[in-house]
Image (cartoon, rainbow, N blue to C red; front, side, top):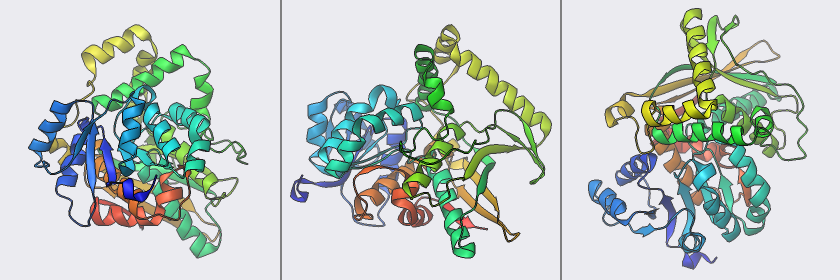
Length: 401
């Protein structure tokens, strides 16, 4: 489409979702640059209510259902980029990705569903390359901190030693935040899909599942399934739920960056624990939850009576008091250890994610005209411009220690 038809730098689709509302509030006070935007969702009344609540009456809005292809096409004709918060994406996200990929409209989201991303790659990557659309999944807490943390460390390693680090491990040092109903619904839907299609297990356990078909990676990656003692850091570790998507995005970034991290690159993620008791207690609790979620009757009970429902999530106070501190470690051949710290000043999944998402779509629509059409990752497409944006405007700092 011609640029003269595009009225907006981006449209926030799913503005009345839990994360969409937080992002709308953030944008209501974000005046550090000139930009044009609009919001969209399926409910006129909820959109009007949102605009009044955050004094956004000057911001245009559009009613569009996630399954209405014609309406979504009309939406794409108005904008350079669309940012979607409508999950679970495996249930509601495909039509918008299809329309963006075929119309040449840039797109980003905050999905953490590797099985769905793989399907989108197989169906629409050729369309995106042909139309010029840049599709960037995982531009929230999963997987911007992991992807850009590894990118920052590897750029430093290459600059200092002329070679990338062969092995990087990420450890979540501190994290404070609560899960929303949307995230929980996405997790439960993955268990439901696996139950209906056991072949998906192979997809979910493959660390290279999102890499291009001709990738050269073969090394067996470490999988933190239980409590372990990390003697090199002097701490106990326990599984990190987001590792299942983050690790796959990092390996895809390596492939898209022409194997810049090396063909034998190793990467894994875990959380640190205060003691072995905490590590084992958390691991056993997580295992019990996953077992219950994999059984249909218990999954329904959890969804109806125990877990947060879509539209529910942490309070504004909880978001403000949340934070995360992630460390990336690599031992270099010269005997030095490189450490990169990624920290955020809000709860990771919502307060920080909304700000990361906003800066990601601004970066996508304004900062990277040289990037061609296709399915990208945060590190392979947005890298340095986004790192700067996050530091300056989103309370997320990525630095070499």
